[in-house]
Length: 381
Image (spheres, helix red, strand yellow):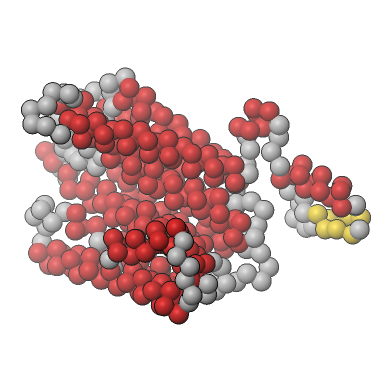
């Protein structure tokens, strides 16, 4: 039969007369994974890499959970001596760092890596080699910080690593250096995946799949990717300035030499509050298809939900100072950020009302996934 085969490096499809079996072999050779260890390690298949991201993310979740258990055991009774103060500070920092940087963001992106190409109808994610590279950067960054912890040089300044506590004067040694380097590793990986998701959605959709037809899951991950692209550079810049202060005697955060400790808080929380929605939006991404499936009708208010996702993304960048209300900033600024903090509840409320309307007008089947969604409604609201 006549078939059109798009070679991996060809600009135009090549028309060839090949049997179905031969075509299947060619496609398998082009898009498949080679045999052996080298083939497994060098695969660029988005499903394989997505699974690796998910498994690695849950591995770090277990480590972070064990750190939380250790803290709870220490705090269970007064005057407990199970964990000393120095080790407790390390465990406290490792728990927060792991949950935010090694689980919260990567697990959402892992689901996007696996599902978005399937949902938009493309064979693979955009820039598949960059996708494979991003996974290894994430893996090695996470292993580095946990190996440092195992060697008693884990970070001990809190997951937010505030200066001047994290600066060279009050934190000698290499502990804060490992934290700053880990942030750079994980955020480079997150940025790479975010770019891949954006390009996949914009350029690799199946013919006829316009932006107003893509699933709401894809829309949420698409907005999430933009949040990562605009938020992550701030914390990467902050961690780079911190490590320059510590290793090269610069004074970006040293007030005695003209620096500003509040600069760290601005850089960190400009990332840290969009981070909340970077973790939250993948959750809402799952709620929409679950509600539609178990209500047995399309989601009510598709355009409203899409606009709410976009509004959440925009508004999330106007909230970061509400983490800094005790730092002596002008009252007018605090008022503005208080208003923004309340305003961002509006788009999320619109989504919830759309989901409730979907259930109201549908014929819901109360199976386990929908029960989890209803629990999400009660807990979140």
